[in-house]
Image 1 (cartoon, rainbow, N blue to C red):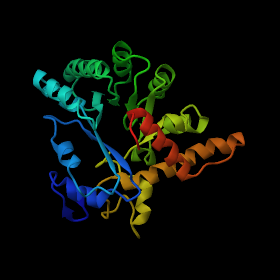
Image 2 (image 1 turned 120 degrees about the horizontal axis):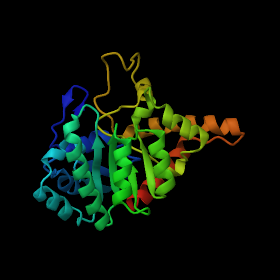
Image 3 (image 1 turned 90 degrees about the vertical axis):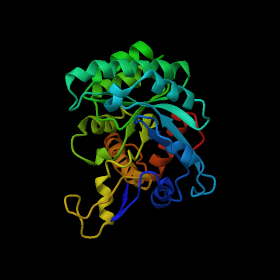
Image 4 (image 1 turned 60 degrees about the vertical axis):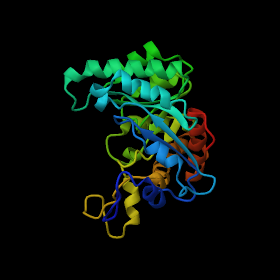
Length: 284
């Protein structure tokens, strides 16, 4: 973690909280998906640095990049962690075929299926990571997840076909949108939002910290552009309004074409905040 030129050690979550959570941020779902499972959630729960009334939740799972290290002991550790009342979801888990050798794909599929089955048995919402694996992702979800289950498709960059299938077949699924929407290559999501095919009521906004700083946030840096050396160190919760700004623009592009009333950034934030509460079954 970095704040400007000053390094923030990974175990100093108290410093991270002070620097990167704005006062109007009322809650967070903190996702941990490395192996072995992190003890940072327990540290975070004991912090006094959170704003008064702030609600800290977390999710635990195994990212597909670490699927080959998944063992029975790790599985049982995650299952036990799910009993913590602040642990509100299983994830990230999923499939990532991008730059991963084909020989790893079967292991990823087996570990993903095992995590899906466990999350469903515990009635835990699931945060799903999918990259370059839409068909296998959809197939495994159809095999292991009931239609009514809550799912968050984290930092969605996959195909429109996968998004349509999830929205149609799983009424409690949500499409997660991060700062990546301010970059090129998001035509699928752009078209679905403009057309109304992906309504605000099915969208979650997320920082995906420390990655994917929204490009429109760079206007905060005087005389600086994203391709210059002066850059934000990390993405964080305070940047979510910039994502909402981009989404509001796309929504209004469609509303204008249909002769409908436009919406503002605050309405996007309010709706997606409510979606987060429904997805994770929490108070936000």
